[in-house]
Amino acid sequence: MNSFIEKLDINQYLPTALDWATNLLLALGILLVGIWIAGKAYKAVTAVANKYDQLDDTLFKFFGSVVRYTILAFVAIAVLNRFGVQTASIIALLGAAGLAVGLALQGTLSNLAAGVMLLIFRPYKVGDFIDTTGQFGKVTEIDMFTTIMQTFDNQQIVIPNSHIWGNKIINHSHYTIRGVDMRFGIAYSENIDKAKAVILKVLSEHQFVLQDPAPFVEVESLNNSSVDFLVRPFCQGEHYFDLLYSVPEQIKKALDEADIEIPFPHRKVILVNESS
Image (cartoon, rainbow, N blue to C red; front, side, top):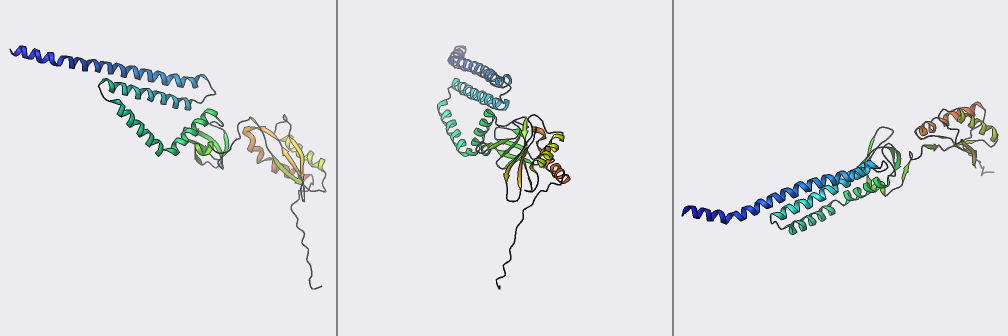
């Protein structure tokens, strides 16, 4: 009699146990397959950046992570669904939580969106010298939220990407050859051709000035007390500041040696004797 009762009890719980075992195996299978698919999807997205050198790998790593975690989220919902958990309420809760987090992180999401745009269009890259938001320096790092720059006096500047994307960006490193604009004035009494020859001689002897394209030296304007030259030598981009901070001194010394006057502003004062 007792064996009959025990057999009856086993038969009563056996379908439930088999059902739980089946769901457990299916859930485990879904989990393993989902993790495998998520990993493959991440590698497939990041491989796009590795295939094309002009694409930024940071951006595609981010996209790969988004794809991977999205797949894993659906896998988790499918696993819970195998055990009879009502996932509709969980999805609604996650949606509400996502909305709340999005509202709380508006500034961060704005930086994220700007970072994505910067990494897609790439107006600058690591190693470039840029001028933006009133800051000038060398780009040392670009991530999804900020751009980090190093100034010439060795300071680190961290700028939110949303500030950069909404402002003018001057990339001084975009072209390999740069023109360096400088202006010099001579007195009206001096010979223009002689002054031009002196300036061109200085440029031809400078080690970083390129002869192709040829330096540009022409009269730009007739100022109040001077004839002003626009001087534009060309150089490789990495020597831009070598020219900017060495050529003016050399031209000043050369003009002095040639006895060419560099005028300074004059003011004429007339005294009126009211008593007379």
